[in-house]
Every structure is written in C-alpha cells, then in structure tokens.
Length: 449
Image (cartoon, rainbow, N blue to C red):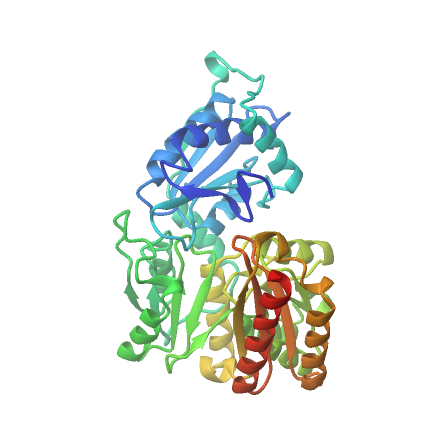
C-alpha cells in the first residue's frame, strides 16, 4: 500500500491528516482516473453522519466538478448503499466519505468503480503518484463542461427497495432490536424492518455529528445484548458507523458473529440450491468451528488473508456467492459487491422466518472453538522474520503436532505496530493460553536478540 491509500481507502484525522485540500485533489485526480474517456461522466457521493462529512464532501465534490464530472449527491447513506446506487443510477463510479467504526475525529474517502468495486492497487498508485508529486491533470473544463452537483431524490427509498427485492418473506411476528450506532443506517434500518412487518425496538438512531460509534454499535455489542433482554426481542442487530458490517445477538442475548452468519446463511443457500460452487469464503481468522460445521454439511471453505477486499477478490475469481469475516463484514455477491450490514440482517431474518426457528438454534449448528491471541513485541524490521528462525518454526510444529488436527497456530505480523500476533485455536482454553504465551515469549527472545 502507498502513503495515502490504506486497506480501505484514504483515512486520517479530519481537517488534519485528511484535509479539505487533500479531499479536493482526491476528487479531481481520482475522478479523472476513474472516468477517463467517458463523455459527461457522473459519480455518486455519499457519507456517514460524522460532523466532518459536510466539509470533506464539499471539497471532494468541487474536485470532481473541476474535472468535468457530475456529482450525484446522496447525502447520508451506508457504504453498501453507495455501491449499489452506482448501478441503480448507472453512474461511472462513486465515493463514500466514512471512517467506518473509527472514532468521530477520523474520516475517510473510499472510491468505487463503475461496477461498485474498490480500486485496484495500480489505480490507487496512479492517483497517489499525482497527488504526492503535486502533479495536476490536464483536464480543465470551462463553461458548460464544468461538472454539476445534482441532489438525488430520496436515495434511502431506492436502497430499501433494492434490499426488499432480495427476499420473498415478511417479518410479521418477529421482534427485532436494533442499535444503529448513531451512524449511516439510522434511518434505513428501522424504516425497512417496520415496512417488512417486524416489531422494532431501536436505540442510538439520533446522530448529532459527534456521537457516531460512541459507546454504541457493533464495537459495543453489550448495548444490543442488553436491549434484546429488556425487550424480549427474537434477534438483535448492531451496526457500525457506515453499516457495512453486522453483529447480531440471539434471543438470549448471546452474540452471533460473522462466522455464525456464514454458517447459517451458507447452509440455507445450499439447501435452496443457491450456493455457487458449494463454497463459503472466510479468512485465516475464521474460527475452526466453521470449518467443522460446513464440513459436516459437505460444504467447502476457502480462507483468504484478513480483509474484506481479499474475500471479495476470491469470490470474484471463483464465482462464489457468500463470504466474509468474523467481524461481521458479509458479502452476498449475488446482490452487492461489498459488505452490507442491513442486507446481511434481512438475509438472516429470512432464514429465521422460513425455518420458523429461533436464532439460538440456528447458531448452534456451529460450535465455536476457543481462540487465544497474544502479542509478541519485536523490532519493526524483524516482525516478518519469524519463519526464518528454526527454533520458532520447530515450536510451532510441535504445538500443531500436539493438537493432532484439532487445533492450529496462526502467526500474523501487525500491519501498523511492531508486533507479531500469535493466535492459537483449539479445544482447551487453559492449554491454549499456555501455548500462546510460551510461543509469544519465544518469538520475543529469538527476534530481539
């Protein structure tokens, strides 16, 4: 990754790292590269509920307009809604202004191409080269060629109608608790669920620009667990700031994470004949319980590196229909090209309604294997050298031999800190803690000498 783009667009402290000047350049240069060769191009622009969204949107849209690109302004909408609105409005690309689950002082700019896909590394590198070297595009439209900003009428309605078309049941008789995280789904989630017949109990749906993700949403699942128990709901749904992920809770207040959703929906899709290639896509952090569960149903699982972009790449290359992460980013590729919390929610509710089964029973199809994560602190330049050390390598082999197929060791260098993350998974929690601490201590000794 370059100096501007991270794993999910350009992010930073708004009005500091991510300034209006940078937003303008990203709009002008990024828009140019995305729409080069198109006649009178148009791009959709949406944002979450952060106070800095207006500032960055104004600058970004000005940059797009200066490159001769019309802005189809959506206002506050979830990230996945922006991706699907590109197709609905036949736009040439789109931009979402969000920092997802991060605190309010952060914001970000995420581009999509005309297919609703994130930019390739080469496209990001081209944009970075221009901006970091203070270059400018040659396109300087004047008069009638300057881009305009066009406000799209009721984009939330269009998004909700799109979601409704993905299911063929209603939710009458279901009690649904919802934590909107004071984020981008604050309007769409309760309205859609009400229209589908559910009895809805909603909290944290009053964004004021600074309360997004504050002690609420998918990063604070205790809130939805409490609401489920207080209201006697059949299910709890908790969203992050831009609603591209979902963490659920069953009727007893137990967390149902992304791995459980992959199990429940993957099995349901197979039963209906909709599971393309008979395969579910996970990541290396996916719990082994999902492997076992899917194996018992004769369903394959492929694991990618951590990150929804890698999940999506595998899904596109192998023509798969469902994939995701434990964190709640679930992609239903038959419907959308990115993780979609609200789409995931109604797919999960549909399985409950079709099978007339409580969520706790559906989730019990997968037995979660305990996982222990311990960080080993090492020098930044040494954190990828663990497999070159014979002592460390032998220790990992010994641990996995001891597990005899009923556990595993996963070592991952941190992308942002001088750490090597040691994750060990198996059946006995105390045993896992012992092995993880021993291995982390050994890594620190071997790599810091």
